Image 1 (cartoon, helix red, strand yellow):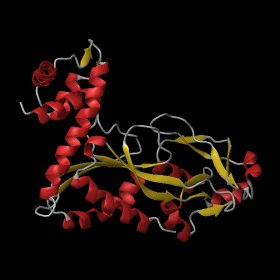
Image 2 (cartoon, one colour):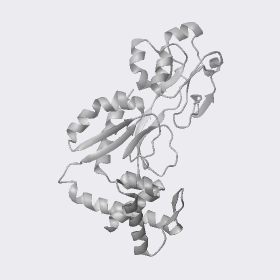
Image 3 (cartoon, rainbow, N blue to C red):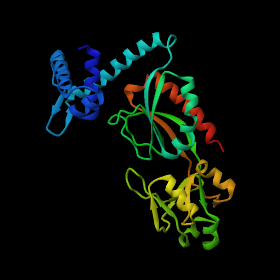
Image 4 (tube, one colour):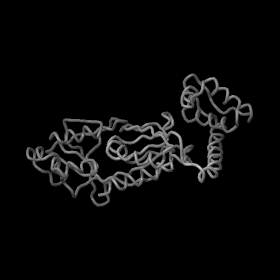
Length: 300
């Protein structure tokens, strides 16, 4: 087997910590993955992986070798790309995952223009508010909204989302209009629980450069933006939501902004992709396209 192929197999095993999962994501028999790692260990003369019945982890030598493999693979892909870029268009299948409302309202309606521009790329578009595991689920890139954890992924900033506070006219007629955060003790909020952690997000606002939070009473908890907006339209409470999400409802008067002087800090939007993919032309052209699209669609 070619050395670069051996390196790629070893890198995948380390990333998913399993021979079986590596075989599944590579579309290979598990025995072939095990044989490839064994061949690689035989060639370099050191043990690269600790193997147990439950998990695979790199040895100290294996961890160092993994980092070198990433660089070698990137160098090979970059060298190949130098001679391909002027001769062929990006091609192949691109797996992308995006947040629900951004996917449905912005990316999916505009996707035809991207496919027309790059006719040799096929898109597999995941639309979910769950934080997918790029390596485990074989996703090329994801759009994330909010602060990022230190995941070791490559990040590209796409802009920010402005957040506003809104309620329905029916709710405000029944409960009054809050003027400042201290009024919220006598109001209801629709609570949003993270699909990944189930943590209920507190009410947020900025005082100068200082973020402030408050627990607002609530009787309804949801775990996606669609349900959050629907409950707000039904008069069940106040919500904090990206402004673009409710732009049409504000224009129609079915939702009303409240406490405009006490907004939460804007949320960063980021495109993330694994280190091994950082030279993929498919990812590069999609990143350029989606950055332009989001900045235009979410502009105030």
